[in-house]
Image (cartoon, rainbow, N blue to C red; front, side, top):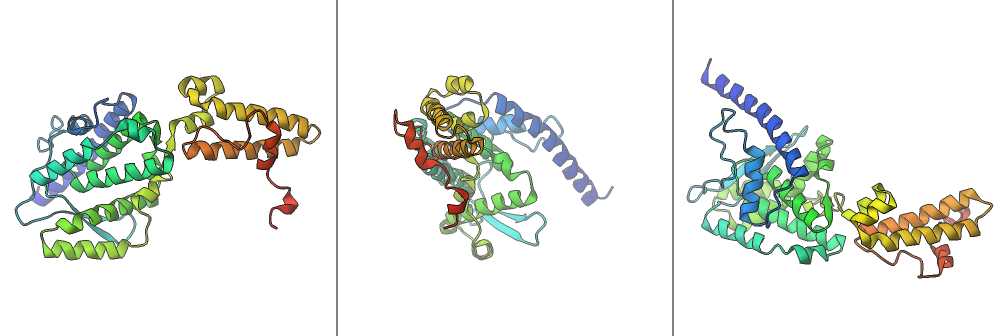
Length: 320
């Protein structure tokens, strides 16, 4: 078999085996996270667990949990990404993974403060996670699997802070994957530009930034994928289970109970109005929970009549 054909066959085999083994290991991590301190050792362990099967499967060049070698002096570490279904190639530059890059990685990880992040409302939390992901993605510490490693790392961090990142929403359709690639690449190239060593790299990266300009950045995309865990519990769990997991939901459920009592009295003879009213109250409560709040849901304490102000306007008034 010609060498090129043999290499192609080996590459295709690795892709199939890697997909099989890493998906299994990612499921295991979802069920049993690393539980580390969100430091360099934590990051390495996630990568090691995801790719642990590859060396024994006949790919000894894979080094699970080990950082990549530094780029040669004067050279940049660049990837050229073909966007799925599009005639667009994205040129992305990453850190040289030299001593300065490793120090930058350690600094970024040392700044993670779970207690502080846990106190943030949703919008500032999304900004903080977006900045962290972009920084770690620019450093790109591993030779392979950085995206899977960073998605799992930030998923575990978000969970420790009371939030949920649904990265799977970007994998359901090629458009979603492309949006995520573009958002990440824009952020990474912006960080890379001041540190590029090679003029050709600089031209390629500048071209990519111009070509992708106007697309949503990573932080903007994450707004669609991040929710407080308690907001998800309020949506999906029965009240006793939701309160057992998140006692701070008591005010939200109390608001719903007061609104229900008020609606039965106010709209005793109009089931449609009652449903419309309750839908409006629930929408208000969910919007507040999604934003990271646990109180002030539109009804003053002990005054259920105040719920009247969150009712949707009659149909004849909506477009005025």
